[in-house]
Length: 535
Image (tube, rainbow, N blue to C red; front, side):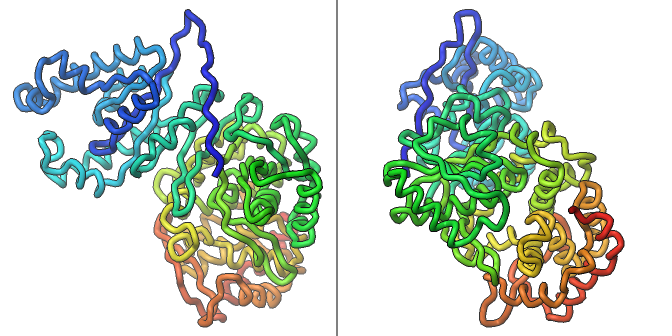
């Protein structure tokens, strides 16, 4: 993996204070470890707890015991709030509860907040029963964790998972936020074979920053090339393909690989996948196989790719018989999701991407599902938080199961029937997201979640997606394609089912007659399907 490129320092001007990097997180998240890593990198560091202890003249635990938490929080808010107001660059590590103060949260607005995310079990293992006054009782500890997590999530500009040495490795990616547009958010993807940063924000492609050193070669489609190819330069070489799913073939992959060879790309160079899901899959596959593997930076420009396909390293091409039947796992070295590119999408493409948003929200449940189910329109300027949350949902799943041996299968919710619809219609009748939306309805019917299916059906219609198959689509062809699904084993096809948002079930066997009934239900409202059909 190529080394991440460190940003060049920028002169903020004498009159403007520079933002600090501020580490926050629950007890046991490793804020002191992070501070030490920042010191080792030559950064000036202040630990807020040490500052407060110096002010009160005793350890925090002693202060708690003598004067109580309420007085401590009042003093902490004043001291930390002033510290943040005065900060001019550098690094600050806050105590776990400092973010509960409105004074502190307001002061954090101009800084880059890095949330060190730690699972509650790991946090308790690290600090439970120590001299920390709030780590004595497990039930209270858990309640505090649940209460603070949403606060950290809302404040965070960057999110780092709990892992040894993570801050040292991710620090260049965190520091890059100083060079990127305000509002950019970063998450560090961590899985079995690779880790990498993902950035979500507006105007990233025009920021003049790039995550890797070395020459960059680009694969994109002809439509996207005209819009953004020059913006991500300088490029050592550009290969264009035609837009659409039909570019995802072995023949096209061979053509791209041969063009890269003729352009002189070497193993020390990297590839840029600039475009939607088709380009991401195709270019990622070419990166995985060119000279047995080169780095790839995914630059998704569609909603479906920004919320789903750019992350996780699944690459591949289609066969006439089945979708994504030839491919490789090849994780990117970075993902740059510039949400401003969504403004150039046709309405139909934006709607197609919403199906993957709905899938992610159904898998995640909680805040994300509540946010998505109440979306009135797909305004590209109002989706950054949704895109980042969807990306985090996928990263969390992939972290636990990079190679699809178990839990990662939940990401296939709606895709078994959805892919079969694409195959049965020759990849020409429905966009990928449109087919996935129909697949979601089939999966919810198979789950016995009739009320949720009705809600999702209405949600799809609201955002311009079909909720029924067109009359001319062959149901038997869909069923035959389901039986060829790439995840089929000797015992048949396994489905992902979901009775309630946030509770997906993998590895579910479903009888053929049930699948047929679910597909036939999609065919029932052909009049609606005809009205909604796109040209």
